[in-house]
Length: 113
Image (cartoon, rainbow, N blue to C red; front, side, top):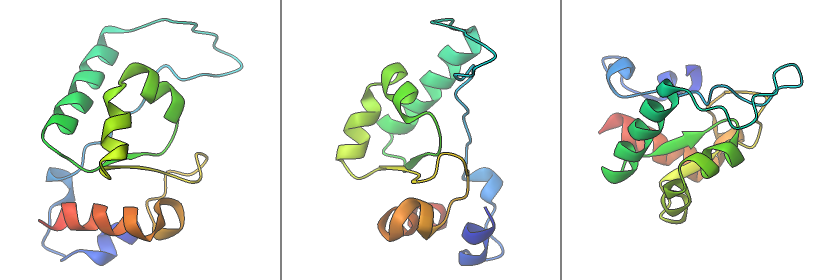
């Protein structure tokens, strides 16, 4: 969040404006979970659906395909210009180089409002 924090007014409380939801369990060579679904995942997916419904700006940094499979509504959010996908799934950096200028600026706009 360093690049984001530098762009915002220092008084802004990012902890009240950002929610990070990880896709777990994620695919791994050492853990073949198949189609295991945990109760906490249902909660996470519900949080994402609520964010979509209220028009939030969303960022997927990893597991894009898994997210689309679990929450198909994310495709509509992307088509509407409210979902941005990182160009580097090995890094969770939120910066113009990973989100593109449009995605990064849209995120900053949402955080600053």
